[in-house]
Image: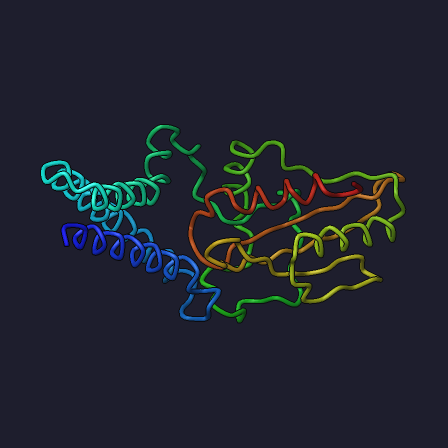
Length: 242
């Protein structure tokens, strides 16, 4: 009988896990747009976690007083769940994330960024334009991501184009269009958790006997991409020709 409260606490903890899981994965389940799930997690994950942790601590205190071993174990479980749900916040306090500039359009060529020819302002859920922001955005990117530069390869342009396509498919991008003659393709890529859709264009050209590969990645939603587009381009560069 005394462990009944502990069972309630365990049930509450499990429900909390399920609720947060649905908030995070709702876009994958076609329940809502990614921005909705992101907002739900940002607004409600910590309050739910604090509630689980607080109730678990109260349960531990209660069972320590009444000396209920079974209920104490269940209360400890609830506390562990609460701490686990708070882990991202705790980690962020201990190791603050690197601040990123308020930009969502990253490219290996800030002077003549690759242009989108098929994807346009009508793409689903888009709130950001595909028009490049110019020198101001280029300056922000150069300051934050000076390592984002074109790929130069000794491969022929056709071979470099095929290698770029291979990398895109390995990264699970959805190829929207590819042009074997113009040596360019456009694709969409989804973020891993919330399933935000970003748009990517890759162009291969010939420069002084080498093949040059330029990439541009643009978020459909949000003023800042939290470094996602730069990370995507870095991954593409690291996988190219490997």
